[in-house]
Image 1 (tube, rainbow, N blue to C red):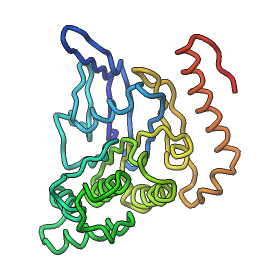
Image 2 (image 1 turned 180 degrees about the horizontal axis):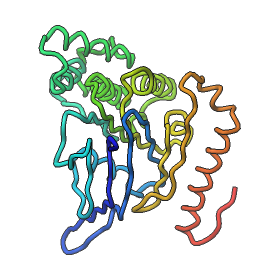
Image 3 (image 1 turned 180 degrees about the vertical axis):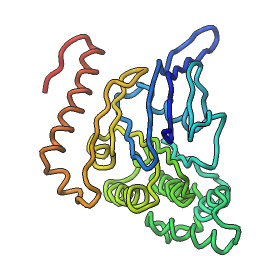
Length: 265
């Protein structure tokens, strides 16, 4: 039994007599401890797919299952970072993270919860901003608080929708390394579904890449770099360039399909 399964899933939105098919007969299995990146052109259904896994939307056909049970709504077994900032504006950075940890029922002791909140804010380089409110933080800093909150919850499943998109390159690299450390190393590996537009980010992070075209999955690519390889070692390997060129060709095929002609570099 897979950790996460989408079985023949379709989703159609209806409004004012009109309908739009967002996903059509999607099948996907994600194993326990597997890091899957979903990549593809804008509007292909990546964020819609992750919303189904989160229990924020429900399929019009097919079924989404976690640990064999149908998803009926949100749950504390899944941590999620949204594409856009999702902090409580009336809570400080520390209290936003504190809230997530408390909801996950990791600790009953308030001191333990607060210590963990401070630890994870330090891990995303925000230890000097723990008492700031969201309006006092930049967009990228707000997103780092949201990431700290989700990672601190230590859920079995992580759903990350473009989590690093608003973050500067230096902190983005640091957060990629932190995500790998917390999710892919050791005995506490997590099932991760990570949506990104960044080809390099996907190759560096993923065990498997799922490339989507509008409404459906077009291709799956196994990655499988050893976890002890550095980023620099991965990026100079022949396998890295092979995978990158394949992903680029898939993007170019999509562009060509949309404008009705072949696209070449």
